Image: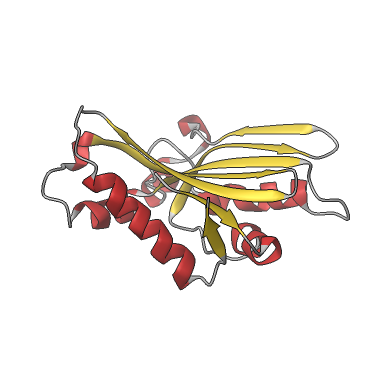
Length: 164
């Protein structure tokens, strides 16, 4: 697990809310505090989608960020910054498989999810990584590989950060 402080808030929020930088992620949950508290549960409601739509967006139990990003943008945009926001993202299956391909000790069925927590509070924005396993292990190779993936992701997108 790593924790990083974002040093350029404007650039990061553009990547988060305007660009498709986070298109490989699903939204697990969001909480945004502006004039009101907005809470979004990212879990899919299968009865809302046609079978074809469900097949086209196979992102597991959670909706892809592309679907919820415009909603969150509408809540956040305005002349005043939100007082607080928190997003919990889960890496999509395709990218999770890529990470697992370099690790021989894990099977896809062992992984509950690879998560990125984004939290803005008191003028500071931090990212924290997390892994959730369905098995018990003392091996930390998945954590290290996922942390390296996130570091590359930030570097490749020119997102400025410092480790906490």
